[in-house]
Each structure stands twice: as C-alpha cells, then as structure tokens.
Image (cartoon, rainbow, N blue to C red; front, side, top):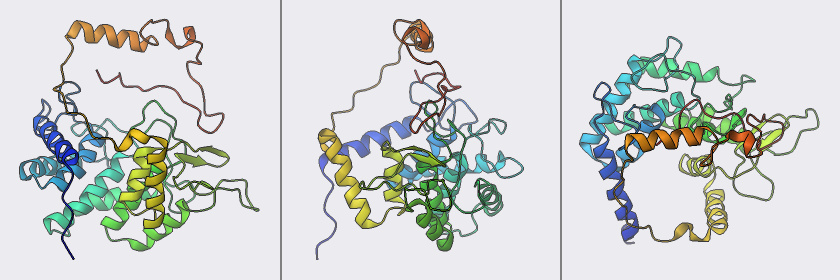
Length: 320
C-alpha cells in the first residue's frame, strides 16, 4: 500500500497563510505573550491562543511551540484558587468563560504526549480537572454553562453545549480517562426525546440528522448546526467514524460552495483610528444607520424563551 496522499494546493496555501499569521502574532504588548489578532485586539485571549495551539502543534513549528508553552505556563500561574483558567492569559481576575479551562486541559494532555512528559503541569491540571467536575448540573458527566460564556459572546448557549462538551471529550481522552469519555459519548449521543420518567430532553443527538444540536437544557433546545462544535465532535472522536462521515456529507450538502478552492489571502489593512471608533459607535448603536436595536424592530435583549432564541449581547466590543 502507498503512503498518505499529498495535500491539495489549496490546503498547502491555507497552511502557509495560517503560519504567517501565527508568526506575526507571536509577540504582543502584554508580557511577551502572543496577540489575539494581527492588526487589532492586541490582548492575549485564552481561547483564541489555545485554539490556535492545535494548529501550532500540528504544524511542528518549534518557535511557535515555544510560544505556546509560554502561554500555558502563564495560564498555570494565573489559575484561580479552585482551578478555573482566566479569559485573558495575563489577567488572573478576568474570569467566567466556560471554554478556557477545558481548552487548557486539552492542550495540556496533547503537550504531555508531544513533549514526552507525563507529569507536565501536574498540579494545575489536577486543579483544573477538579474544577470541571463541578461544572455539571447533575453530578454526572455532561458539562453545563451559562449563556454567552463561550466564544459566541452574542449567542445564547444554555446548559449543555456541544462545543464545550466536545472539548471535554477531547481532554478526557488526552489525559487518559477513557471510562469518563465513554460515559460522555453515551450522554451526548443519547435520545433527543423526553424520557417517560422526566420531561428533560436528553443528549444532543437529532433524530433523522447526523449533526448534533448546538445546546440542550431540559425542554429548551437549539438544533442549528454549530459548525465548530460538530467539527470538534469529529476531531475528538465524540462522533463515531460512521456518523462523522455522514456529518461531513450533510454539512457539505447545505453549502455546495464549502469545498470550493480557497481564494488567495490578501494582506489585511487596519482602518485609521478615527474610522475604527466611528464604526464601533455605529455598531453599538445597532448598525450602519444607528438608532439601536429597537429602531430596527428588534428586541434589545431577548431571553431564551424558546430553543434557538438569541440572548443579550457581548460585554466585548466588536473586533475591529
């Protein structure tokens, strides 16, 4: 049998473009930590840096890996007393995110294997695992979260979210806890119908569709396709190989152009300060015309009264 097939040129171009961005962002103004965005957002946001860490480790780039190790060491120092990982790498008081701690554990598990150091960050990992054990609402295995606490600052993800639980499944396997990972797979892939003994909707599976629901909590549910969450479900093994194949087919069928060749990456241009501030004010007022959400006929702060309802907006400004 032959070796692996060569990657298509579009994938090689995307890889090189990603490495260019990562190298550009490797040094920012905060404690020599990477910056989140190349031409804006100089702060080191934990989730952005750790998600990019997956690509760094896949690339094999040694200088970038050294940068990632510095990020992990800083997070370990800034961990809360009970094990929570902050939202900003350099600020131990910026807390509350639901995805930073599982991302930290996932990267720690992968780095243990990559470095050949089973005891890498032993104490911070133990504290973080303890923290995550208390993030369940029923003292079982599926992790719950508060709305707007993961990367979707502007969307409600209430209760059991796919994105965070896919991360949890990933770190359980990376940190050699196959029994708990098996229990999580069983919970996530459970029925999407209320049981006879309870009105609670179980699991994130959707009848007649291979992708998972974005989130589920009791009788509330959002069955829109969370592309990042479903992709992580495939990558971490939360979805079986058979289901993963059906998921890819289903997703590509929704967007026929999804597999089209990538366009060449154009260098970004940062807007002048005055224009950035003017655009930010217009966005915060409700759009290019201003007037706020109410002027556009929208509820300024809708609640989760039904599955898929949007929630209050982000505390962060748009990334300009």
